[in-house]
Length: 180
Image (cartoon, rainbow, N blue to C red):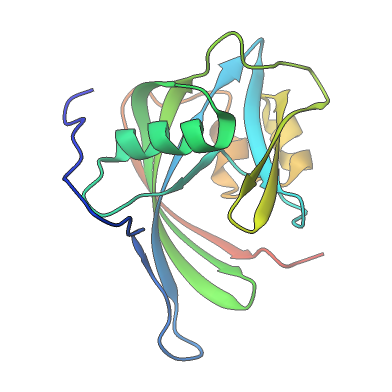
């Protein structure tokens, strides 16, 4: 991809602005990837959470979004992924663990190597990311399957069967993720 360049840095600094006072929103820049295999989509979750999401993570200052996704997948999956076209830029507004979050997200197609495990229903990979244990699995890439899975942002379920040919900008309000 064009722009695959990282500025020299001595320390890693994630692009995340934490609230200074109670009631203020958190801001973060998150990069995520959609990997498909045999009609399935790769998803992951922290084991302490009930919802699933697309693999990815926060960008670092001085790091391009495509390199963020490559770095995150190497850290989380232990494999080098190929980065495809951007699908969406998303201004995502949601409530999580008592905090309002304003997230700017870049969503790319990505290719996971064939040697990465695949199973139609079982967990295929586990990893520790900071304080969280992550688990990864493949799910049917259908609207019904994603709706049943609980995978925010919820526009994903509505668009998974007809991905955009050119990048789309979406403003999305998920609401409270702590709901039953």
